[in-house]
Length: 387
Image (cartoon, rainbow, N blue to C red):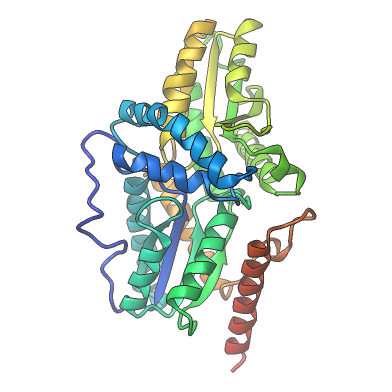
């Protein structure tokens, strides 16, 4: 948590105050611990979720990993201010998004945003309860993971399905879904802004030759082998950002690397830490790091990229170690969020064909059920629009 930001969730609701609104926007993400006391339950929720990581004897081994890691992770959060700032940034983004929507799409407003995190408060359950109380009719489930993975957006959708069945068994709420947006032009330009800012900070002698390292959260290889689209979608975002940078006259070499691997499974590589050491070993003394799968600052940017990998870079001899700022409250990014939602509304709340296509590998029974529910929402919406 950033200094000066106190968690207020125990005294405020998970939504904006617009009780007359009929359209709600559920901003889904994994969340993060508000305080150090929240770290252990946060880790427990992650390591017990078989959508994100499948372990033999999940409850026993998952709890074992949590017990081994909890003090270390608490110390990491302590070093970034005592908790995660992701809720703060999500609320700032939500406020800015609905403000733009209320002006650009007044016929569908006033618009309300709701925050629903997978592993911490405010939970998806809290958000759904608020939407039902507020008289919302239609909810746009808007993932804040711009690249789709069954381990991230998929897990959120599975939880949404379970919560919806429990809290809204009569299906009073109608749903539509924004499940991926990693190549949206406004997102690409926002990322390019952040990268360009750091390239301009490089000393002139290395400004054109410094490698740009795009870093994304890794995945266990068994998820990749199943056919999860995350890897290709992250690569797509990188390709579009690089193309935009080329249009701006920035021609630096670049690579995509992967961070945050934990536990006993084999994970996707090359690992970001290893890449930093490798480039330093062959003579590069400057690097620009770009968190390409994260839009808001949290532990992976503030601790892992800034502190942990910063120390690795310094020890390896990197003199200029620069990290592109997360998108956070960057106005072009807020505008991108509003544009993505408005385009979804203008499309008639269309469902992405990608969301309805299963992975070629074996999927969980829960994922199959969730996709059937999503498909039923699409058919119901089509039937309603024809009357």
